[in-house]
Length: 99
Image (cartoon, rainbow, N blue to C red; front, side, top):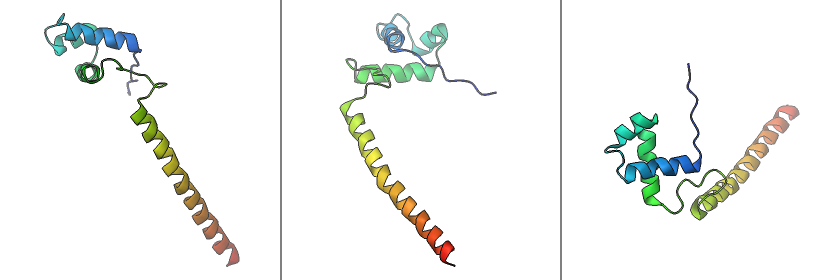
């Protein structure tokens, strides 16, 4: 049986991390046990929050400028590859047709 990944909204993630940072819980493992969140997920949230506290957990709609640029470059890189593949397919089709 496969488990579905839980999705959390931005505010509960921030509130949870603040509980850990403000030492309401002595350890991340204790917090994760009491809040029913996997320890690894909570540690990831904490690292992410400490790295960019003002822009933590941007969500899917809001990306950092670096991520936006990277996504745009990847899309631009994908276009020539698909054109090249379509030309290859056309060439194979024409060769097979002429035989």
